[in-house]
Amino acid sequence: MNRVCVTSVVLSFCISALCGPVLIPFLKRLKCGQTVREDGPKTHLKKTGTPTMGGILILSSMVVTSLLYAGTYPEIAPVLFLTFGFGLVGFLDDYIKVVCARSLGLTPWQKLGGQMAVTGIFAYYLMHFTDVSLAMKIPFLPGRYIDLGVWNIPLLFFVVLGCANGANFTDGLDGLAGSVTLIVAVFFTAVAVGTGSGIMPVTCAVAGALMGFLLFNVHPASVFMGDTGSLALGGFVAACGYMLQMPLFIAIVGMVYLVEVASVILQVAFFKLSGGRRIFKMAPLHHHFELCGWSETRIVAAFTIFTAIMCLIGLAGS
Image (cartoon, rainbow, N blue to C red; front, side):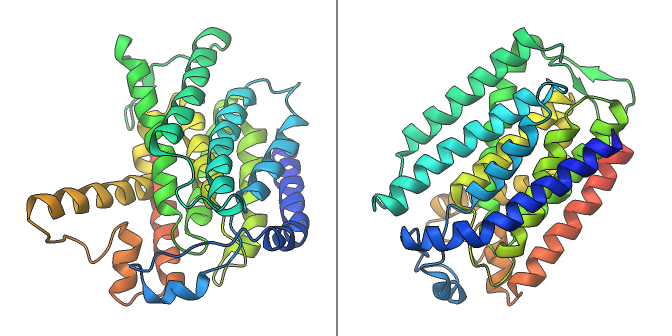
């Protein structure tokens, strides 16, 4: 088991790290440059033209590595499917935006429809082709579960879509989404090894892929993951949570995702209700800290450390 973990991490890292210098120039030739919001932090304007769709590195490394263990560890299939499925939706959105030069990409309804279709297939597979129960472990109450019956499926859709879009909102600074999700992947690996759930190859593969990707994505980034990467990572976190019967723990270990989404919702709601006033200088929350004078590297370090602490709390409560 330990050999599987080490091999998955190292192999996935090597694929990601070695393919980066090949993929990034290719993306530049395709003119897959990022368009930066003019109303955002002025320091981001220099990032205009940086290649996006780098999530292809994460997905390809994770898929190739995981497939080597698919026969021995069939439990990885749902995680692999949800991660790749959301990554594919993100890829279509990125491709339409940057390659086909349609600034809006997929319409909101097309993107939501794709996400719901992938989530629906995941839920069906989970219920009919695995022994995984939708009953959820209750944090800090060992051996206690909660089963919501007919509400389990609506909650699953809420959790999966929330994770995907939470990771998407978090992907706003160099290395932020990758660093935060790397810590969460390590958390799920520790739990998977401890419980013998069989999803270690894919959790380790994602961890290795992210370490390789971060070589090119830390500040100053030479490539961005785009929706291809951020939606895939959100799907990965949600899938792991359900395969380990720990969706309630996502609110703990994925607190950064939750806070980022909540900051946007609060900002928009307060802006409309108050006639134009704002709670934060800018949402999502990481931009608020930027406008308060924090550097990108400081924000990424703070959010990553916070995630590491929350994961330790999650381990204590598992």
